[in-house]
Amino acid sequence: MTTTLAPDRRTEAPGPASARTPRTALPRAALRLHRKALVVGAALVGVFTLLLLGSLLWRSLYSPAQAAACGTGAGCPGLHSYGTAHSVFWSLLNQSQNVLLLVPLVIAAYAAGPLTARERELGTHHLLWTQSAASPTRWLRSTLALASVAVAVAGVLLVMVYRTALAPVAGAWGVGGWVPGGYAASGPVLVAYCLLGLAVGVCAGTLIGRALPAIFAGVVGTGLLMGVGVAVRPWLWPASTLTVPFTRDRSAWPASGADWPEDAEIRGQWLVTGNGDRIDLESCYATPGGIAGCGSRSGAENWLVEFHPFSHRLPVMLVETGLVLLLAALAVGAAFLVLRRRTP
Image (tube, rainbow, N blue to C red; front, side, top):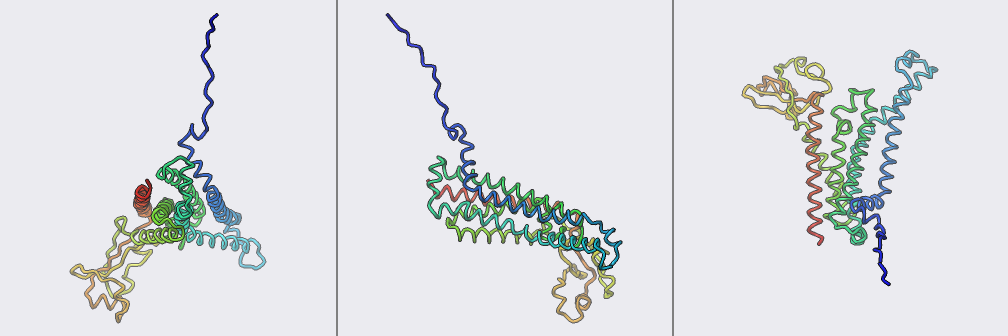
């Protein structure tokens, strides 16, 4: 008697999830490793939002016209309450400009230390690469991609919150406009500098490999680049010019609000002689007679002012954002180049 063996139709058991989805295994591992930092960052963004928008909501509960109608009597609760709410809101709005300028430095410190250099300093980076079955380049790429998304989302949220709080007092002196903190927090420049801080921090951590020196290098490098950005900002876009005849009569000199807009950013002011030579005003302050005497002795004929009106702010922002993102890309490229040369 013969028997026929039926083919075994059992299918193989599915492999582990990490084998089925190798592209998502590294981001998940990076997310688990740095989840505490993400939670802390989200909490800080939430506190910033709560304080700034909460003070704005408190201020909006009182109408300035109704508060003013109460007069100046000490017993008027509407005037006193509105004044307190307005003072708190104005103080938080001013301080938020300075706080937001520190965000790229904080990101650079974390990227240089805990994100990259700490594992190398402790010697745990080899274990991480072995357990994740990934090359050092792939591990850094996944970590950097996750951090970039988190930084970009947080930066956009901070800009949106600041712009929302700034809207009721837009154009007021000391906030927004061309003020360094208000300028950066009002557009994509802040997001670009946050990504630059991440890139510089990763580059410093990969290059140095020790946490504290890497943090110092990342923060200082990011701060210097931000300072350079503020210095070259007026020269990123062609400025408007104003020429006024120079006389000894002070009332004939150009003035903000009369000859150029009050919200303009002045790039430079000079006295110009008949042959086209420019005289810097700084050199005239210490001379007898001040600017008037300096101009008369040098034969100045015109007063030249170069300025950026408020309408130039968006083009300047876009140019600066592009340049900052280019620097960030170069820093990331340098980090990957160093990593490839130092690892097999």
